[in-house]
Length: 302
Image 1 (tube, rainbow, N blue to C red):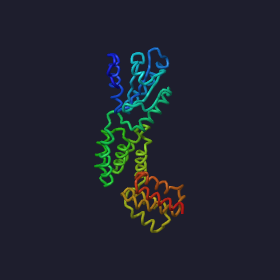
Image 2 (cartoon, one colour):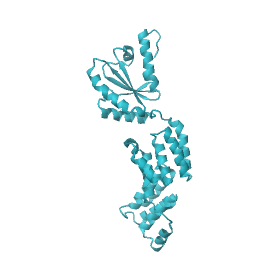
Image 3 (tube, rainbow, N blue to C red):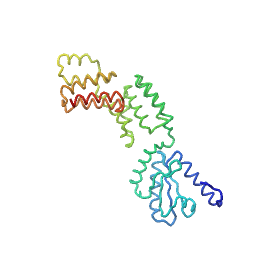
Image 4 (cartoon, rainbow, N blue to C red):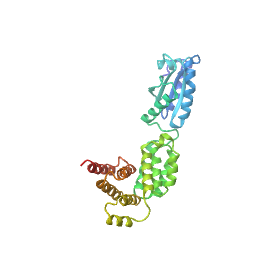
């Protein structure tokens, strides 16, 4: 906003606006409230905005207020015709008109949507571009079978991005692979509700369920039971669990698909449920999971 030819008061108003709104909006979502001392609805809305922005401060939300009587130039630039008027500002630009949202529930819903769409980073969190290579390294180490090292890597990334579901999910899966399922369960139980429903956390939960279902010990006894009775589905289900525990996902998938081929409704579809858990634990977008899903579809629909 140009200041050439402005009065001293207007120049100060512009500088304050740039300092309190434009600059913070480069990294945060700024809720901009146009109000006046004489405005009754403004006074009703103000404590609601104060509370919400305080609750959302760690998520990258800030509040700025413009008194339309004192900052007439700013109000005119935004063409304010009635108050309260509330905008969401991001990277110097209005991204949403929040004026018609007057309750806490309405405002929190729209803020959640904006934060997700704009990918606003939580306050103090490392930018996603900085942590993505670290996440990739942790995933590679985990895929190579070095679970303790993967735990160490993801634990360090969590310090940089404590609310990132990719990082938390990676740490959970590393803990499970390292045999620390109890610690993983404790972490899951302590997650905020908005994080607990993320796909990355669902993947970790599926891995935990698979680990909990995997029997300890060798597979020889189970293989002997199947040799004696190929229709022993319980033995084959337990064998699949043992193969998962040993890292043989292909063998586990084969065993589960064999149960489905023989009796897809056995134990209320237990093999199919376990098979889908296996895919979710691997990651539904993983090429391996996509290939296995096609195998399941071919089995069910031919």
